[in-house]
Length: 509
Image (cartoon, rainbow, N blue to C red; front, side):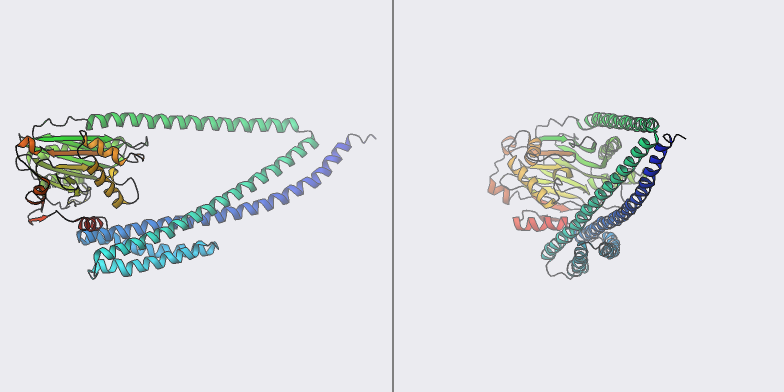
């Protein structure tokens, strides 16, 4: 009996007897390793999510306290209490999770909890109850504690991210090893059993399927890119149509404006500016920013600015204008909008305005450094009973009022630094012909634009055009700016640099 045909079968059986158990054992070991890696990665992601949630709750807590400190409106304490309660639970959970991972971040989580408790005890409670001996010093101490807390949480998140990446890399290596073991076994089995052709056919089918999926993914990505490009073109067209309204050509008032969209193509925003001549000596001005980006933001911007203009034509009180527009936006559940609207009177050299959650205007007068004026009020479209305050500024010939959206000061994580850069840019561009563009260029000379930026300036005619002689000393005394809030009377704003810094710190605390 010829046993030659049986020899390959015997060889195949022997090979299978060694290969199959080896593959099974190796696969089981690698599977256990991968399962453990996935479990560890899941725990790490959960801990990192808790760390980021803690950072968000701390921000809610701090923001609520800042709002209450600035306005003494107890409505701001609601987010403070909610953030405090959630933050305590989140920090406890974070400590347990990092301890379970045997990660060095556990000590940082404990330190963050202690820092937050110290912040509540020595900063939040005195400011909230009015028992702080020195609000400014307390706020500075609070800022240092908050910076340390955020440093701890950021370090925890970074450590967890590094751990997660390392675990993922190990899991990928284990998967690669499983694939190699399986492939080697298949090759040996195919060579031993003479099924190479079938294996090749199956491999070709798998490659075809992967290629089809890759082609489909590429097609979807191309469609998404085309959709983004189309949205940007449409939004840019809308933005140009909405914003590029000619500024008035007035003999006693000068205007300049600039609008620069975000450098990111997906960030097409809803910033706008307007200046409309109402009489020979009075001009209405407005500037604002709609929440979000894209076509919807641009359309909401158009509706809001038209509502402001319409309201200004039937009433000249900025507070009443904001009240009417806010009611309309709340009724239609429109997007949140920050805005400033007011009037410039060339006969009296007065600016009268009101703000709705918008950054403070900047006033530049002859012989004086630029300074920030009063601001306040909730954004439009948030609450139906929001209250707004009237601000009246008595100025001088040659004065310039600078309005801007938050992109001009929030290009860094430090708003106070951003405001200081804005004031410096206003001072450096004071005598430029294109005032608004020069301010923008000075701010973004060495940094990219991360958000839409709109700047509008309104200036009174100089003393040469009006026939008055105003020296620097006289501008600081007889023509010193006076700000009035509603019916509460005026308060001099010719403050020292130290008082200006303290006021700015209170506004952002």
